[in-house]
Image 1 (cartoon, rainbow, N blue to C red):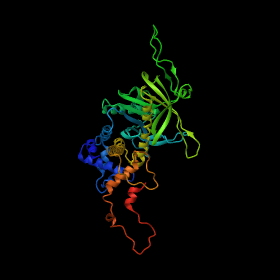
Image 2 (cartoon, rainbow, N blue to C red):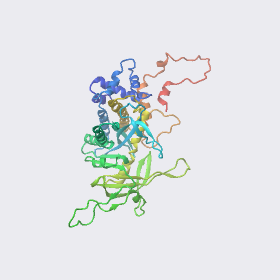
Image 3 (cartoon, helix red, strand yellow):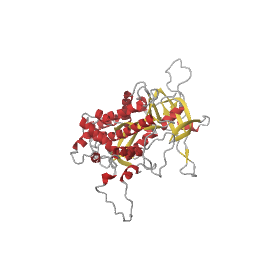
Length: 467
């Protein structure tokens, strides 16, 4: 972590402070505010202004260098002929202040389906790469984290040139355009022989992303069930007139799902800790007017998996998934497995905001709201990259014994949770200082002949074994 901090900063003092902040992000049991990071590194009795200036001024921290160290570690453990599978998505971080850069009213994705909830929040874009595991699973590790705010809208009585400038900013700072820029940057950082596979949801399956993909990229994403598709042009060319670009209309994804003449196929994929038999239908190559006639696509419809809320309850079904892929020749099993890996980015969002504290710092300026959250995500990515590299090299990690009520992970190659990794890191850092003599100056032992009414708390056990 210190080596990556040296590459990401301009001076040794900034590198040391940045490494201390990243360790503090993983070790601090409270919110990841700058003041708590100062206390975590033991600087609460000195001048703390340098800790704030580290993020509030441009050029002092380059988080792309931190993510670059994670990317190199991942590629070192990935076979040369295997594609790099990357999940693409955005998330919101709730805020309470209106003067924070990029904060505004955003749609709450966790709100009820029948009511659109608006919350004050910031929006961030993330790219997470898959670290393949034995058995077909994968753990996604963040490779990029970008603050993607919406430009501030001018007042109604603003000058016409200000209104035009605002509309142009909306086009340039569109979330899809920013995502495409990060994809192109990642493609440039990868070796030319390494294939890049991108997984996105329906908001990124559009003309901007698909037409702007650089060479050597494959996109897999969800689409609408009524997406209008066409077959490639067929038949002899006419003697006169213009050559047709699109053929006859193809069935929509929903029509393909409900067509009984098209048989269901079955493939086995690994998801949620075990293997599943997935039923699907496919059609390709097809053309979509959004992407143009030069990009043949494959459409795949995945039937919903049956599940029960509890043992003996009613059998329920999820919604079917309608997918598009820019590589019609991609094997179906690989196609579906790579898409199932995309769920890992949702896990990353939850753990970054709850366990690591991404977005909890009270900072207002534009550089601070980019650098500080990205540094916390980079610390999270380095934690998982180090753990996965150790598991790949040695087969397992010496994790602490879990509580009695917690079931051990199942499978031949179980992965520890992020909470277990954080407790293991805290044990390695604090265990040398936690021994009975350390707390003897303030612990009062009861007399030998006294009857104990309550158990004496065990501080090390409370720190390391707490859920």
